[in-house]
Length: 291
Image 1 (cartoon, rainbow, N blue to C red):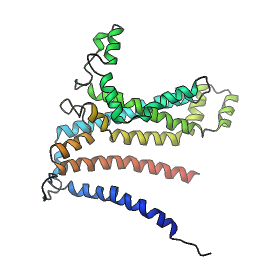
Image 2: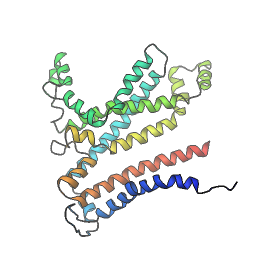
Image 3: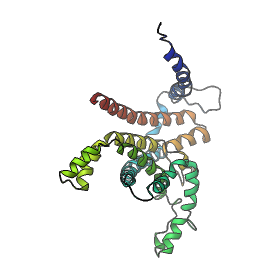
Image 4: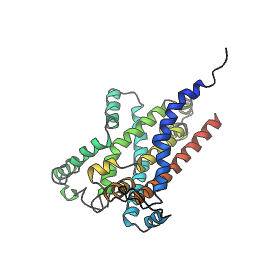
């Protein structure tokens, strides 16, 4: 029977065409627009070279947004991953009610950032929000703050709200990774007299390296994609103090009709994200070579 070599390509043709239309072509269009002064309304535009990119270096609001993205990145990696790993280690143990607690921990994953933003807008409300009411209730009313209107606190309040979902995500990744940890090695370490910390540090953690790479990469990319929760809760305010690159790009492109400048912000964000994706792919290829 003659082999029909074209069948795999036929199945791939439609998804590749869709990917080309909705992802690849818009990327090139965005790069081209970033070299123009297009306002998204006029039928014509002028090519202005690297002017949009030069302006970014002197734009206080863009630099503030970039710095806030770095804060998001640190929060998602330094806070979400260790806590997610700790909860995954706990949930991997056998105890009564394990499935119930695992489901409850997973629950934030089922909510979109828009819904989470609405919930945390109420939790962080300064007068009757849960956090400030709790602080007042235990006699720490002096710690009650206007979390969303203080320029020095608002970004950290937003990161804290987003961590509610991101920690659950990290937990799921590590729970899946723990299933591949060889129990024989853990039992051998136990027989050799290794304590709990030594078994975790020398046996479990090295085996979780693939899951760790995925968790770091996904969390970094998610921190760079932060937009919806910022837009829902503060829209980047007050005075752009909580803005992130995606939010600032949206404001410049669709509110200020400065599409060329917004496209330049998008291109910068794209290449930063692409760097982490390449790092992830290199690690994945190394893993396959070691198999």
